[in-house]
Image 1 (cartoon, one colour):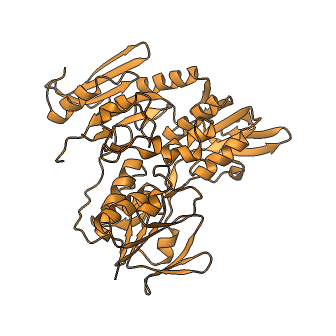
Image 2: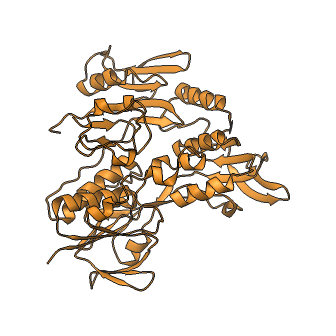
Amino acid sequence: MRYVCIVCGYIYDPAHGDPVAGIPPGTAFEDLPDSWVCPECAASKEMFEPVKEGE
Amino acid sequence: MAKRYIIIGSGAAGLEAATAIRTADSLGNITVVSEESWPYYSRIRIGEVVDGRSEPDKLALRLPNWYDEQKINLLLKSRVTRIVHAKKQVQLADGQLLDYDSLLIATGARAFVPNFPGSDLAKTLRFMADAVALRQAIVGVKRAVVIGGGLLGLELAASLAKAGLAVTVVERNNRLLPRQLDLVAGELVLELLQRQGIDFVLPASTAQIRQENNGLSVDMDDGCSLPADLVLVSAGVRPAIELAQAAGIEVDQGILINDQMQTSIPGIYAAGDCAEHRGQLYGIWPASSEQGRFAGRAMAGLDVTYAGTTRMVTLKVAEIGVFSMGKTGDEDGEVQAERSGDDYKRLVRDENGVLIGATLVGDLSERRHILMALTAGKPYP
């Protein structure tokens, strides 16, 4: 499932991961380390909400 | 023949457009021209470079080899000087002419500096190059004044305070973030920032900046002065529309675009901070990246209708969480406000008890329920 940062709107897509932060494609949001932050605005994981697919 | 795309600007709008084009058109020639020295990075986070928490490379939003993998020709430190739309060409500062079939203007915005005496003595923070220069400039500096207490000014003040400077923020309103927060929430944010060691002078207007023997002096309208080694202005941004204007493209405050992201000249699109859509200049990251995605798809020949971007309601001010949504004015309905320690909750209800607006500072854990109640129009809690 994709997650959106409610501070800046960045979308974490497990299909892409976050290669710049060393997160390989295929990594589920739940499996991101707690130290991971939003690459766009540095918000912590708890500032992310699941994206309702189909919108 | 493969379609030739040129994108002017490598920020959120430009790069999201390039990404969207590549998804829709695997063969097209995509060239991104940017005056900047660093490829697509998080502009929101450049304050981290100023205070040393991060490095320019760490704020990159694409891996260095991504551009080659995606066959995106990125020309950094390059400036487009002219759009020759009659020939579907752009000219670079070195004289080179590039042909396009589809052109995107994503030139962004520049920091706005009010025109008062000595304003040229102040610095601004907008680009990564500014952040890198500022990091050098604050070495050995003790006192900084930030003119402007908006979101970016407060972030910048917090960065400078983290770097060990004594920071004073000058704000012309009588409270912080008046557009986003009510009086009590504004005061709480002020108090939390003061605890981070930041001083505030408000309401106060800057009359001039003077060079003195031992540094700078920021003089206010009311006659007071603040001594400083470094003065920064954070007074908003202005769209970079000159290139479009010179090409005869219709502009108002921004470059005018329709719902298909087209400007007044066929084959030329605009997106991001430089664009004006249905009378709106957003100047926020989520809108720029969304407009970029729409523009990219439109340029690749797909049908798109951009209807605007919902403004984000959650902010992070110098690591302080702030949530504000719906109607938050005192006159809008019945207000229930409660402050407990460093947390603040303010709910506004209509005559039927239905929640119509909310503000949270600090603890944002209730925002999810509030969001659902607000969108569903259900009683809360």
